[in-house]
Image (cartoon, rainbow, N blue to C red; front, top):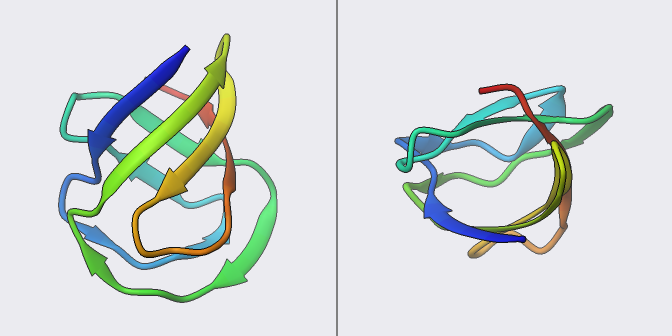
Length: 71
């Protein structure tokens, strides 16, 4: 399943299991630790999901982010 939305507010990259709230109401958490800073405000995201896990692609951020849905 492919999910398209936007980050609800600021995006500051990746870190220690960062939580990402989307404008569609879904909440996804980064799986594991990987630090990379990149600031964007409300960037578009695409999540290629399989069940409650997936890979999130953020517009303007080069690295895919492994995520799991928490809400």
